[in-house]
Image (tube, rainbow, N blue to C red; front, side):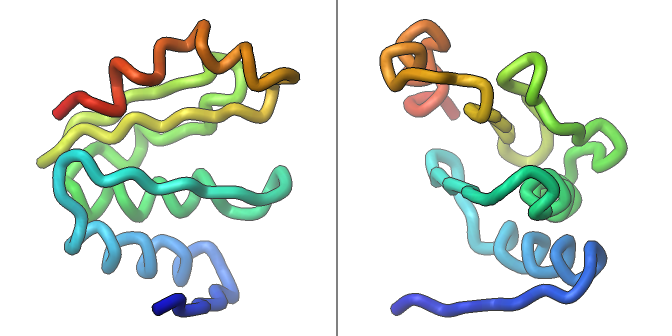
Amino acid sequence: MLRKIISKNAQETIQVAFDLSQKLKAGDILLLEGDLGAGKTTFVKGLAKGLKAKIKDVVSPTFVLMNIYNGKIPIYHFDLYRLEKPQELASLNIDEYLGAD
């Protein structure tokens, strides 16, 4: 069942992600899609907070493509915005992370 949640501000976005984080387990994969400034990184801050990672460390990985946040389970935060072709994905070795803890 698909549920639509509309957040009106950053604090609500963080709370929604925090609530979701309580249901996540190692190996779960979330895909966040949206325009620049849509709140994807803010959402990840809520996940980090819920998974006991340092929320102050959460920044958009736009220029580095990936950040790792250590908490109860690690969060691998990818930003694929700068990739121009699907083939570029292979160079990131994402499959190493998808099967990780």
